[in-house]
Image (tube, rainbow, N blue to C red; front, top):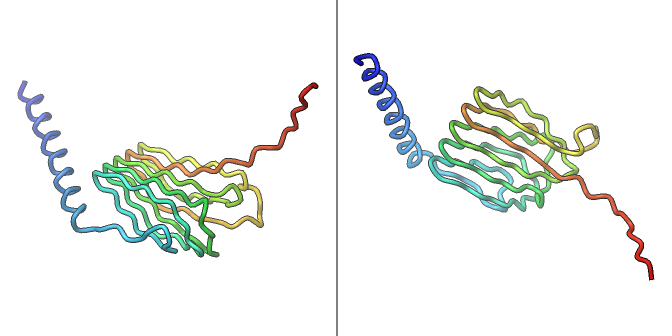
Length: 158
């Protein structure tokens, strides 16, 4: 019984400390960037952020999701050469939508989380490249683009 009580006290203390640190960081580290920014620094700590970018030369930046989520749509943005995006999650998630013509190279490391990238231009050497770097701990990062649907002619009988 004593061991169970000690374990429960440890777990409660761990989670209380983690939540207190997250609340402090939320006030100390603000987000920077908007839909016209070429560089982003998004921080979602115990909340969520949605952004649809129209950047004319998107260079990347950073994203941190700590007990929160970030959803960024880059389909209307133009990619600058050498664009790098650093992503970090801790019990959170990041979802990034990119144009089908972009290639995404992921160097993100995951521990008890996941990274998923789906871009149709992954084998195109001439496609603009967005490099993802960072870590995910008990969270996830998803980057995706849909390939344009092939045009299918449908004949209708008179």
